Amino acid sequence: MPTWLHALDRHFPVRYLTLLGAAVAALAGGIAWFGFGRWPALAPAGAALLLLGVHDLQQARHAVLRNYPVIGHLRFLLEWIRPEIRQYFIDSDSEAVPFSRQQRSLVYQRSKGESDKRPFGSQLDMHQAGYEWINHSMQPSQLPSADFRVRIGGPRCSQPYAASLFNISAMSFGALSANAILALNGGARRGGFAHDTGEGSISAHHRVQGGDLVWEIGSGYFGCRDQAGRFDEGRFMIQARDPQVRLIELKLSQGAKPGHGGVLPGPKVTIEIADARGVPAGVDCVSPAAHSAFGTPVELLQFLDRLRTLSGGKPVGFKLCIGHPWEWFAIAKAMRETQLLPDFIVVDGAEGGTGAAPLEFTDHVGAPLQEGLRLVHNTLVGLNLRQHIRIGCSGKIVSAFDIARALALGADWCNSARGFMFALGCIQAQHCHTGACPTGVATQDPARARALVVPSKIERVASFHHETLAALRELVQAAGLRQPGDIRPQHIMRRQADQQVRSLETLLPTVAPGALLAAERGEADWPLHVFARYWAQATPHSFQPLLDGSAQFGATRQVGAAAAAGDGGGAGGEAQRLLQCAGVDLADRRG
Image 1 (cartoon, one colour):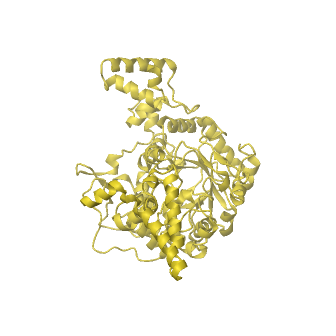
Image 2 (spheres, helix red, strand yellow; image 1 turned 180 degrees about the vertical axis):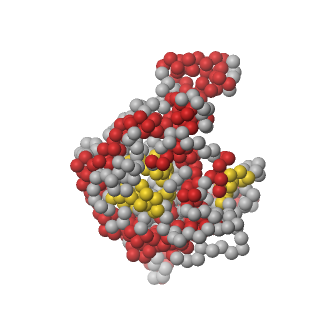
Image 3 (cartoon, one colour; image 1 turned 90 degrees about the horizontal axis):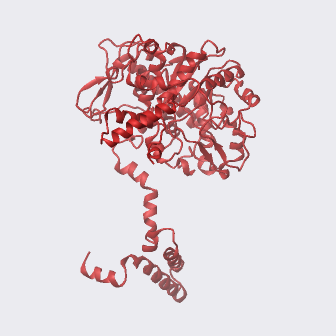
C-alpha cells in the first residue's frame, strides 16, 4: 500500500470510503434530480446504501460489517456462492466434494440418454494409493439381459419380492419436494425397481405413479403411530398391506447421522407432511434417537416377525450403520437363539447422507460401507445364516463399478440416494437443509419445486437406472462371469500406499462358513480380531456389552497401574481401550 494511502487511512479509514461514496452519491443525486431533473435513481440508491452503512455500524451481530460498512456484505455474498464457484471453476473433474464432477457428469449423461464415453484415456492417477480396478478375462462371457434381480423373502415370508440390483435409497417427502417424489416413483415404475420412502412414511405423492415401495419405518413410527408416538398395529396394517408396498424396512440407524435423532421444526410441518407422518401440522415433528417398540436384540427380532405377520407375509428387514461391534453381534446371536431371521439387512455406510447432520456426525461417526458391509456379511457366513438373509447396501454408489465393488464385499443389491438426485437434476449446491434448492429437488417451496418437471424427470430416473445396469452387465462380461452375484473379492484389486497391489480378498479376509460356530465350541481360532475381541461381550438379551462391575474395576486398576508406570500400551493400554469401548468414563473414575 502506498505511503499516502497509509497516511489517509490513519485519518480516515479507507474501509469507510464506500460509506462516504454513498453519501456523496445521495447528495449529488439529490442536487441533479431537483436542480436539473436528471439521474432520478442516483439519490435513492445512494441514500439506501448510506442507511445500510449506518445500520452496519450500529448492529452488534457481525464484526465484519461494523468495520466494513456496506462493502462487508460482499463477503457474505461470496461466501454464499462459494460452493458454486469452487464446483464450477476450481475443483478438478476427479476431486470429490463429496461427488466429483466426473461422477456427476456420468449420472447426467446416463439419465439423459447421452453418450457416457470418454476420449483420450483415464483422468485418474492409477499409481495413487486407493486406486481400484476389476480384473478382466481373456474369455469374456455373454449375458442375455441387464435386468438383474434378487429374490428377497425367507421361509416365513409368503410374499417374496424380486428386487432389482439397483434401487432408490431412503429419502423422505419433506426432505424432497412433491415433484421429486413423483418423478422418482414414476421412474421406479417405468424401470421396474424399488423406491424407498425414507422414514417420513408414504405420502400421497408416493401413490400417484404406482411404483414399488420400500416402506421405511424409523423411531418416530411415522405413518403407523398413535398420538403418543408409539407403534400402532392398526395403522401399520392399513399401510403395509397395500399392494404397492413390497418391502418393510425398520431403520435402526443411518449413515448420515447414526445414533442421532431429528426434529422437523413446526413451521416446516405442512399439512401434506403431517398427513403422511400422522402428526399435527405446524408442531415440531420429533424423530427420537432410539426405538420405543423394543429394547433388546431378541425383542427387535420379535418385533420384525410381528411386522411380517401384520403385513400379510411381506419381506421384513432392518437398516443400520455399523457402530459398536458387540451390538451387531448381539443381534446375530439373537437370530441364532430365536431362529427369527430378518428377510434382509441393509447396511448404510457413513459416507452416505442426503439428510443434514452435525459435522461431527457426518465426518466422524459410524463405519464406512466397506467395513460395515464386510462385517455383516462375514458374521452371517460364520454363523451359517448368510444363505437365509439378503444384504442390501447404500453409501455413495453411483456407477456400475461402485455396484460391482459392493457385490464383491458381500452385498446382494445396492441402493443409491444422491445418484438418483443427480438424475433429477441436482447440481450438488448443498442447500438441501435450507429449502433453497436451485433445482427444486430438496425443497418445500412450491415456486422452486415447480422447476422440476415431472414427466421429463421420470424418463431420466428410468434411463439412469437402465444405463447403469447395462454398464454393470458389460463389467460382468469383461470379467468372464455369468452373473453379477459371481463377483468376489478376488476380482477387485486395490493399490496400497507402498505401491503394492492386493486384491480385496487379501485386504478384507473372508470368514469361512461356520467358522464362528467352530470358534465358540473351541474347535478353531477366532477368524478375525474383531470377533476375538467383541464376540464374548455380546448378549442377545441386551445391546449393552457383557462387562460387569468387577471386570470394570479390575480393568480400571490395570489402567491405573499402567498410567502410574507411564505405560500407554501393553495390558494397561488394552484395558483402557476395553473400558472406552464399554462406555466407561475414565476421567470420572480417576476423579
